[in-house]
Length: 630
Ligand SMILES: *[C@@H]1O[C@H](CO)[C@@H](O)[C@H](O)[C@H]1NC(C)=O
Ligand SMILES: *[C@@H]1O[C@H](CO)[C@@H](O)[C@H](O)[C@H]1NC(C)=O
Ligand SMILES: *[C@@H]1O[C@H](CO)[C@@H](O)[C@H](O)[C@H]1NC(C)=O
Ligand SMILES: [Cu+2]
Image 1 (spheres, rainbow, N blue to C red):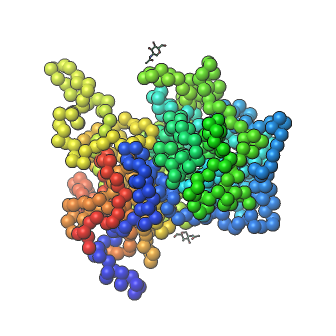
Image 2 (image 1 turned 90 degrees about the horizontal axis):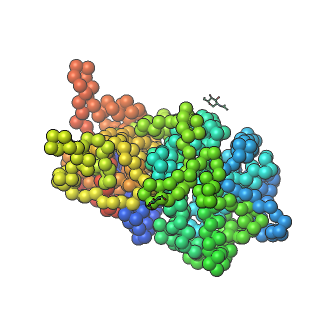
Image 3 (image 1 turned 135 degrees about the vertical axis):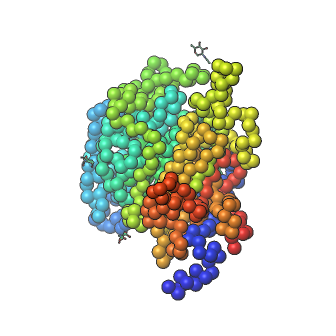
């Protein structure tokens, strides 16, 4: 109590219960590092944001008791031993396991695969089950050892193989298939939506919206509650052959690894968008492996790794001894990383692809192959006659009934804080979202009419180019995107809060009107409800193709003014509270609702404003810029 009063006295913001705090220095360092290598016209802001948030936010370690040290843990220890990359084989005699695109599996192969996953999940292990035990490795301290450095590719090669071997104990001839996310991305080239992909039906991954209640993984539990997805908040999964071809122009591990590579070639940074596109547990590294789709996606990343190795070898690079000289910490060449005594560099061994598995080519249209799958279609792009394989939609395979119409229906959150999942522990607060009409957006209708009957197809009434003064001063730039942008009248601005002093993430979408030169809407975000410990969190926002928005704070001394702020906030239980237990209370705070007249806005302004202004100005800049606050 004494401490509380003291803080209250020295709180420079008077009685405000929410206020800006500086961006913690590890985040600042991460953003600064990206700033030294790229800018917002070269790299989508959402990609930078995802990487720094994943890298800097401390997360719950799910691997509770390290069973590796437990003598009764034969199953896991043997599973690891079995992968021994120092073993050799007679290449003449081995039959390599063939890993192919998941849509090219036969029905029988699919059934075996999913059966193996389900048995693994149903086999108790310690206080969990075998699937979740493997999934729990991809959390806590191991995150650093497996990401954000050159170990990303070798580590995930071991990890996906470990899962494959575990599945083969149940179904001896299954191999892990890969999910070529480009096949879904390319649906957009044929005016189809990746959210309508046949993948998200009961035959394959099950539904992509909300709790997973159809398909092979229905009703799965995870360390953070029920298995949840929020697919399609980004329009485009964003990782396809255009991105891959670029990465494959580089021949050295350091040129495709985080920290050392240019961002456009950094496979780890660029592999983020599909994580975000699937949503739910998959969006955060700490929980992603609880989502089985993770293993199919990472098998695809491993496919790219294999492509890179082949190319580099052909060019004379000694791939088995490739390692950046300046790697640090857990990423040094000889470090061990959770798989017994195996070292990082051993993950580069030729052993895997000479003795264990090989990759079948990506589905292809060439030589009349028609992509070799009932779930894929061979199309030609109008613009340049490029032929490509793309996923079929649910309609095309007679599964229209499973279609989910993504009309901005919102987001299913896990409401977990340090793995305790209940809405009760969260507080809601409103944010204003202001959006400039996105550059490149064309209204489908609303065209002006001239000369009595001519429709002016080139313009629309909301923003004819002849009114340039409507565009606010920070004029819109062509920012880099993560794949294609939508051209719907409604925007999907993705808002995210990430706990700084708790492990919890909250997602929401705001839906401004793309047609208008400027539009404003309100969304409710949530963060841990503060108690004796105040809540610190970060707010970030980007549009449906990953263009980042800026976070502004209202000037407490001059309530009509906003200043760009760090995006980091603290909320504390000072009266009057600016956060509420429910959204309803928040609405009551914002509106005067009176039965006799229409609702009117209350005088109490919203503290946080998100501005999607499409400016190329770097946004992650400390220190607190507003002098007036103190
Ligand atoms: C999963 O949950 C849904 C909805 O609650 C239910 O209809 C279905 O039977 C459940 N499936 C299994 C395998 O338990
Ligand atoms: C595309 O192919 C058609 C038929 O082969 C041809 O007539 C046309 O000129 C090609 N267009 C481009 C842009 O190459
Ligand atoms: C989870 O949160 C609820 C609500 O605050 C609390 O009552 C409960 O004790 C918490 N559970 C654990 C395991 O911390
Ligand atoms: Cu990972």
